[in-house]
Length: 73
View 1 (cartoon, rainbow, N blue to C red):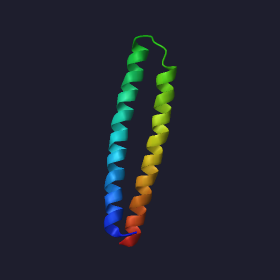
View 2 (view 1 turned 30 degrees about the horizontal axis):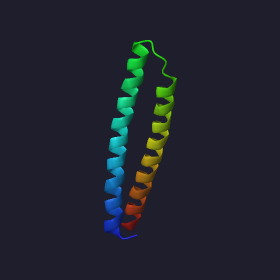
View 3 (view 1 turned 90 degrees about the vertical axis):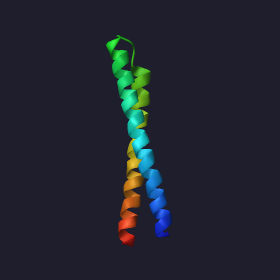
C-alpha cells in the first residue's frame, strides 16, 4: 500500500480509538451512576461489554497499520 494512504488510514484509526475510549468512559460512568441509584445495570453492562470488544478490534486494526507502516520504513 502507498505510504501516504497508509498514514491517512492510521490517522483515521487513531481517531476511532480515541473516540472509542471516550465512549467507553461515558458508558462506565453511566453504569456506575445506575449502580449508585440501585438500578438494574444488566443492559448497560451488556452494552459496555460490546463497546469494549469493538474497542479491542479498533486497537488491533490500528496496531496492524502501525506494523505495516514500520515495515515500509
